[in-house]
Image (cartoon, rainbow, N blue to C red; front, side):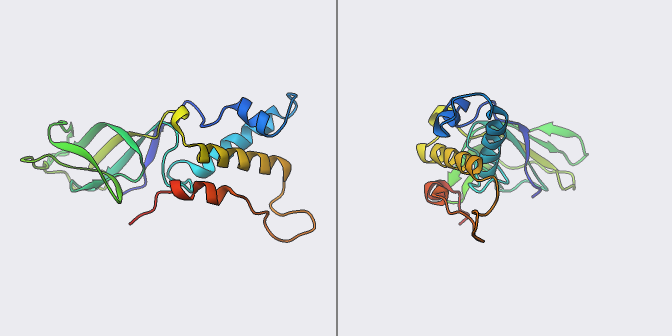
Amino acid sequence: MLAPVRTEAPSDTPVSFNEVKAHCRVDDNSSDAVLTVLLNAAVDHLDGWSGILGRCIVTQTWRQDFAAFACLRLPLGPVASVSEVKYFDADGVQQTLSTDVYQLLTDARGPYLDLKPGQSWPGTYSRPDAVSVTFVAGMAAAAVPGAIKAAILLLVSHWNENREAVAEGAMFEVPLGVSALIAPHRRVNV
C-alpha cells in the first residue's frame, strides 16, 4: 500500500478565525497574519495522514492506491463516502469498478472496502498502484467534537504566546492539555 494522497483539501477549518482571535484575546488586526498561520499549523498538526489524530477532522478527499484487490483498508476516517474505485485490468487499461461489487464497512481497525455477497474482485495488472480508491473523509466543521476544537485553540494561543519551543529560563517544553483533549479522538491501530 502506498501513502495516501489528499486530492481535495478541506474548504473550512474546525474553528473560525474569529474564535481564534477571541480565544487569544486579540482585539486589533495587527496579529491576523500570524494567527492565520498558527491556526493552519494547529489543524495540520492534528489532521490527516501526517496529523497526530490519525484521522480527518473536516471533510476532505483522499486517494489510496493498492497493488491488488483484497480487503482494501482505508488509512483515514471517518469515511463519509467512496467517490470511485479505479483499477488497471489485466491488459493495463484503467477501468472503474461498479459500486455493485463492493461495500464500505468499518470495524475496530477502521474503514475498509470489501466484496458484497456473491461478488468477486476483477483481475488487475501488476503495478503498485493497480487499484485506486478515492474517498471523502472527515465531517462538517460544525460537527467537530468540542475537545478537538479546544485543542486547536490551545495550540494556537500557546504558540502565539510562546514563540519558542521552550519556556524562558527553562530547558523543557511547556506542557499543554492538548494530549488529554485529543486522546479519546485519536485513531489507534489494533
